[in-house]
Structure formats: C-alpha cells, structure tokens
Length: 515
Image (cartoon, rainbow, N blue to C red; front, side, top):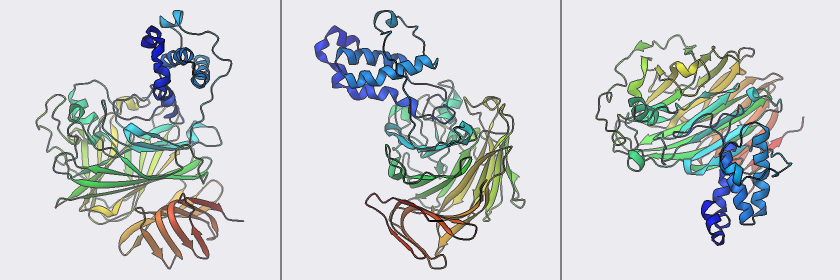
C-alpha cells in the first residue's frame, strides 16, 4: 500500500489481488472452539491479520476494486464488533475509514478446506445443536516451507470441545526440545519408517515432500453428498535421508452418527524399499493416561527402546537427532500382540469436565504396542499445558501396506457413554479391506460396513452380498439388517445385495433408503 500511494499508476492491489484475498483465510482454518489448526511453528490461538484487512480495504479503494472493498469492509466490522480487533496503530489516524460498513460479515465454515502450500486437507461436520462440543473436525497434512516441520503425513483430531489428537507445537527457538523434537517426526501424529524418518535440504535442512491429495469428498467449495460422512485419501513419499525410502497412503474419514456423536477412521499404509523394514504409528492425545482394556498385553518397561540417537550429532539449524523420540519417558512395551485392542485416553482435569478418546484397533500379526509420556503439548488447555502428553506407538515389523495401521477414534464426555460397541476388520484373501462397526447411537442401533482401499481396488464378498470398486464407501444398516443408506466417497461401482450403483461422473453417491 505504501508503494502504491507513492505511485498510484502501479496498481499493485489490482495486479496482485490473490495476495489480498488470501488475508482472510486464517479465520477459516478453525476448529469449532475457534482454535486454529496447527502446522509448523504456527500458534493455536492466533487470528487473521486484521490490520492488514484495513490496508487491503484502503488499497482496494485506491485501485477501484469494489469486490475487494465489499469483502473487507464487513470483515473489519466483524472484527471490531466482536472485540477481536482495536484500532490502536498509527495508520488508523491517517488512513482508516470510520464509515466502512453497516454489514457485519458472517463466516460460513465449509465442510472441507485446504491449505495448499502446507499439504493440508481438512474436514469438519458442525452439529445442528450449535454447540462446539458436538462439532467434529480433523485434518491431514504436511509439507516443507519456512517455519515448517519435518512431520510426514500428520493428523489432528477434535472432539468434545477440544483438540484431543494434537500436534506438539513449538515454544522457544534454538533449544534442544525445539530442534530435536518439536519440529521433527516424533512430535507429530504420523508414521516413522525404520526409525529413520527425517527432513533433508531446504530451509534449515527440514525439507520433506508435500502431502498429495488422491481424492476427497466433499471437494473444497462443494456441498457434501451426505450430511453425515466425509473422507480424504492422501499420499506421501518419505525419502529424505537414505534409511526410510517409503511410500505412504492415508485415508481419514469423519463419520457422524447423531447430532451429538460420531467417530473418525484412520487407515495408514506404509511400505519401504529397504529390507528388514519396520514402521511406527504415533498418536499423541492430551490427557492423564492411556488405559488398555486388554489385560494380556504384558507391558514391560523398555527404557532403551527409543534412545539410539539421543546423543547423535546436533548442529543448530543444520543437523538433528532424528526422529526425536528419545524425548519419550516412562516407555512401556507390550509383547507381540495380534488381537483386537480397545484403549481410552482419559482427560479428567479440564475445567469444563472430563473428556475421553476411545480407540478401537483391529489386530494384525507382527505388532507391538508402546505407551509413553511425550513432552507437553504447547498451548493446550490448562492444566495440560504443563503436563506430559500420553502417546501411543504401534510398531509393525515388515510392510504395513496390505495390512495397514487401522484405528477408529471416538470422543465422548463424562456424561455420555461411547456409542461404538464393536469394530471388526473385513479382509479378502488375508488383505485388509475395511471395517464392520456397530454403534448404539442416542436414538438407534446401527451397523456400518466401511470399505477403505486404494483407488481403483476391488473388494468382493459373496457372504455379505457386497462388491465395491473404489477408495471409500459406507453401507449403513439398522439393527434388523435393513438398509438405511449408501455412501460412496470415491468409487466406480457398488453392489449390495439387490442394489446396484454406478457412481456419477464425480465418483460420489449418497442415498437414503425409504423407510
């Protein structure tokens, strides 16, 4: 704006309108409790640059851009009205317009959105109760940028009014914790390959590949075909350094089962080109502890499990002690365990009351489970901003592609019971294809068949009367096995008993069956 005022013939606002339109985007990357999704060094409780809104408005007047004037005037009015912004800077005296707008902008948060440079794909499903605790939201993402983290394909999960599945965040730059944990793999909800996933090259040697979108529903800016379901499928190449050399694929689904209940399905595939491969799935959840219902897992103290690089070479902003998991404390590991698992993260010290995140994990061979205390999660609600973060690590010896990491997450609070009563994996010729999930919602019992496979794959099960070609589909039945609805997030054809569905040109479909 300063340069444009010096030489109005430059018309910089008109030439670079994309920069101005981008200013408002941060207010769209918020959870139902108004906290911001976290990537890289970003803060949880940041906000859009409201002073820049003012400059953009003045610039749009100088360059005669009525569309931008009409966009920013209500946004400025909204920030002033809600007390998020006060005109305290010197420019306000000389440049800002007191009579900008009578209209207060209303920000309608879309079902899905993307932060393109950060590789982020987010999903949200706000409840018609209009309560933030009933909203559901999640994202997957990761990419290289200035102030970016080497995080792989990371997720966050929201439930019961809190970001529960958390990214660690950051505090002071240059410290051991920041350089050798906060901004490398172990601080994120990701998969570490061969104990060696890392960043390399680029800004301060933290370069990673960007998470790439394979498919999603709804598409950004589009209405969802179903009011209850959404999903994304993404990919990532973990090939920095020379000891991971892995290809990965992650399917993350958000499934609402009532105005107050719902759950997430996370399917993470990972395979390495190297021999003797192993893969570790990490999940951090604010709380007091993780409790396993399986009594036969035989957890034992394993203090040396993650300390191989604890004293490795470290050079400020150049060389790190990857992958950073030597910061984990109270490390306890199960015996090799192949049965299904149910576990719960307890978070009982919040001022708003106790909340929980329950995990259903279908069993596979060659798996061990480790529970640890990770470092504190910055900017988490009190008192968890000063307490360690309970964390689960699942190790798969060998490839985790045909039999991937599969976790179903359900948030609930102290006044509710979890709705999911059972989770069973669906296989075809020993290969994972999906889940059968039974839930007792507040109004009814439902059974859902959820097919999660790679794009273009085929699943066929004659006993179920089910055929599906595609990435993601859900068939919902009532307790009497009567078909309730069919959802195709991405696929070409689905057959369920006497129903035959060939998806439309957008490869999506949803239909409620007549009662």
